[in-house]
Length: 177
Image (cartoon, rainbow, N blue to C red; front, side, top):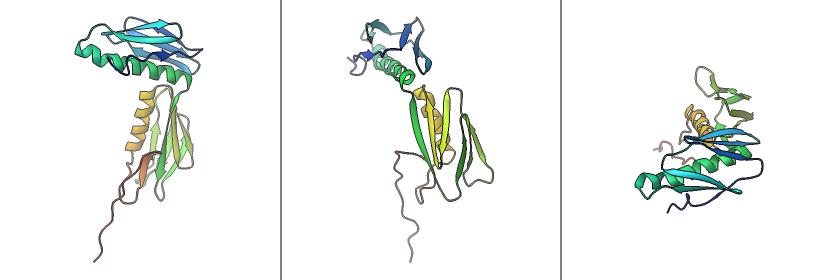
């Protein structure tokens, strides 16, 4: 049995889960998310818990058991608390400005770089730190990865955009004579 899949999902007050044939809708104080309902698992609401069970012991059902539970748990957590990722911009002459849906960055290229976030994601800038907020965990992670990919940190001086908790392994420069 899946160690993750067998755990019940606590449903906080103010959150409602509607289970359909092909989608599960989670509505909470921060917004609404739709999670796909996978074919080989069933989701039942029992009191304050949502329980995910698989229909049989086939390989695909075992794989979908933990996945369905994780997707549903992330949706419940997102509509109650929201998710956030922090990025740091390091480099001489690098600048970040803006906020809301769009940020402007000067990353050492011959042109300024503009990034527009998709609907449902908010960007906040505080000096050289970018904060990505949203209720959809996958979308927040995707936006953070796209911003990081604009100028990945390099290993010699550490210049670029990195996650706040990321550790850049530094390399030694050229060896002198």
